[in-house]
View 1 (cartoon, one colour):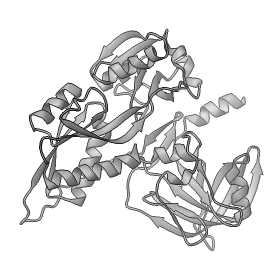
View 2 (spheres, rainbow, N blue to C red):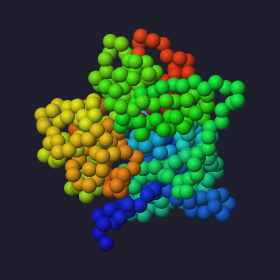
View 3 (cartoon, rainbow, N blue to C red):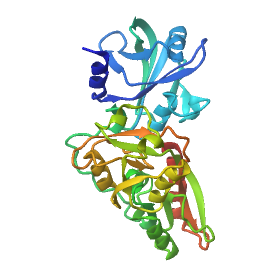
View 4 (cartoon, helix red, strand yellow):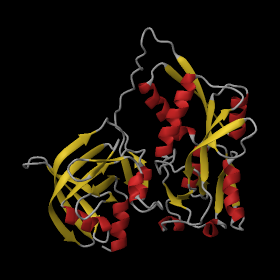
Length: 385
């Protein structure tokens, strides 16, 4: 068996994603790992193993400190994984997320799915990696939720099989329901709105969140006629003389390719490589104009083969080999609605990111409940996107 076949085969397996941290006399460090497994629950202390590349700075620091902490990530924490994997240009990785000292010499991630604080008991150098076996001195299990999964060279989310229908939220008998209306850009809504509604209703069950989906023109209309309290959308083509925008995230463009496309084997893709390829455009302003501007700013012209206002239609056309697309969001699953496989790759060009903003109407003051939802979304999305 060749090395390439082995790596390709392993890429099809699904693993959870963890950040392994350490601190001590040799200093503080952390690295993203996908090779983490239990060893035994029936020894004096439960044990687990992690595999860390021998060329990683963290490997030698873990060996010197003699301990490490495994932080299993939630599906909303892929940005933290990218930071510790070196995919994000950040000077101090520990500014990604909120980290607290465990009290046993390492660092744990606030709101991780679970953390295991370990004493290093054994190390084996095998090939390119150290296998570290640690005995768990303390574990912190957070509220359940989907884990971040890595498979087919992209992130995904775990989905429980046989999940039951969610129960109705409990509302105090003497409470009055207040409605907060949000307008959300059509391709952002599936990524953001369901979780916002679910999480916020657990915080305040007396707030009912109503949603308007649409492109930029639709959303501006809903805000202007006061149907929406505020908008979640891209920072483009927004009339600034009567609105105020608060940036909450900056998203790098993502190239979505058919799984068997020749460029899918690369770590990143350039606009020059894509210029002659058929583009399946998401025909929804302002995202369409943003994608085309990436090519024109690079002195190129996009080759539009198909276009659709439907986000899932675009992904399915890509999955069926009809072209590529560029999106502002990275789908959590590489599988299209018709079961085809896609891959997501970053652009290698130094292209301008797209800004996600909360937009309010300056001619009126929104309710206290709407202000609270606005503040909650700003805080959550600023950390999650």
